[in-house]
Length: 313
Ligand SMILES: [Fe+2]
Image 1 (cartoon, protein in one colour):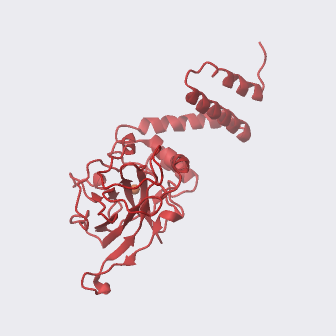
Image 2 (image 1 turned 60 degrees about the vertical axis):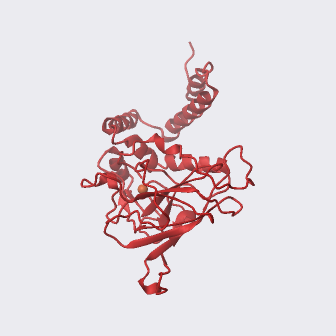
Image 3 (image 1 turned 45 degrees about the vertical axis):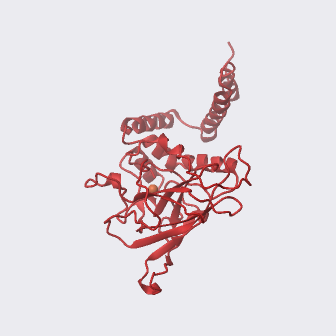
């Protein structure tokens, strides 16, 4: 039996994958082992530090249950979730940038007519959101579906409010024949990700804050196009440059504009956000495909998390 060197140990661990039946699994594990072995060598990780890491991951597991997913929060705050999103977007090609789905999406938000409000009787400053959904060539997509959700002016989503049983600050809207959408809400506010668990300890150990800048989530879908999971971030927010989960992007940062009042008196109109969404053609669909006015497909991605999980984004 030969004595393994540092490099020899990595080679031996990789050799154990020789009979892995799934080639993609083999590819991922090969890279993971290489990087983890390299991490230990690069940092000169001590046994005590390794033990601390194991205890940290154990604590992350212990606090995780059907309502709290600390591993996703860990992934989010390390930028891994955002990296996965960036890599996916790179494969899709052109279109509006995507952003993290987050844990607060709830399927089945009420579909409302264009112009309606998702805010109910939520106190706060009224906000109008409007724009157009187009394909990569700028052609309007009629009957595209916008699924929208956001935190309120107190920084909380409806499922974090003890007194709320139904949905609030959520809605779905279909674009008109011109691809345009418009609805009303209230201005969102920045909020902290849960920092009362091991990830919070890690954030503080890194000298980091737990806050996300104010934002409004969207899933935009239309038949023949890739679902777009994204969010609009409010320019000027204190945390726009230091989003705890790395979701905010320049291309998704929007400012408030004075809205047009129905009576023409702009000083009485609420602030507005104007943003156009561009969808990428679905895989196998020609990018020049002419859009049809058909009902969009349901979004497929949001099922990865329980809607009641209250961590992360
Ligand atoms: Fe969010």
